[in-house]
Length: 383
Image (cartoon, rainbow, N blue to C red; front, side, top):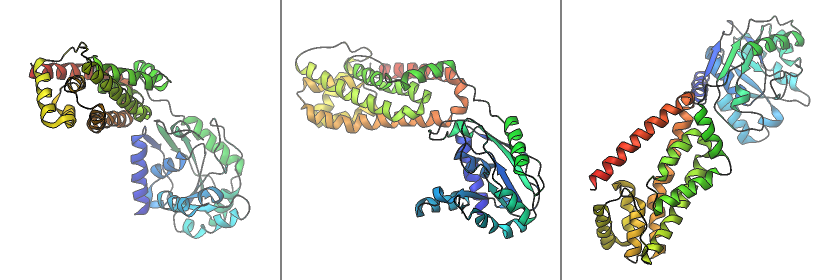
């Protein structure tokens, strides 16, 4: 049951991060699985790909994964990991699993002993072959591709398709060089191609991922709070789907810009300056004046839901002499909640839908159409 739950867990996780494809299956009875190792995600890939009836257990470096009780607990429960010492005594750690192999289980080992770089396989140690020979079970080579893009060594998580190819069993008498050659051949045949992408998405991702991304969100939101007719949530819907990992920074920058623009609009209105406010109506302004007279600065809490632009609240608050500090506090609670929620929601959508990023152009077309229709209905409703 634990092995089945782990398999479901990691298949679900890898499906959300790009997908996992498996070819081949383990033989009946116990076996020692040997695989290439370039990423911590290799363990997740194997637990997702190997059948649960073997109850695969993963050999993990004792000096790394079992260096603290917390990390050891995570390793054991989520990856069925067991410690293997790399500085002496590792063979004894492996031989302790001979009974489980004879009972039909599977032990998964990374014979390189550590993660490699650039897809190049290192030297295979003999431990896996010693264990297989002692238990009288075959050695099964496995090639893994795509995990080095999914979670690079010392890198961050990013979407990638993962492929796992299970090869034909080798006899327990095989040499380390024979096992390495079999794994290398499987890996070379299993190289995962990058997911198809949209040129438009890549260009937008480059812009919002550059140092200019947050200032752009800040300027857009600030301009909208003054006069610009397109709300910052539209920019977040475009940018956060294109580059989900920047969602929080972009959302916070948009919120800061909106608050700065709102305070400036309030001060200008208090000084008698009238800025252009396209796509607003007299009825919107009348409604906001009524709310401000009844509730003061707290009236801005209605803004995220009634369709009236933030600039109207800022301008009318200035005309009504609402204290700037009170207005800012209320606006952060009301507008801030919406801006952050929208930005993070679109970021989550972009992450979950990354396998469809080649359709990003279609998404933009649907987004633009939906926004234009919605804006027209709001303006018409307040006319």
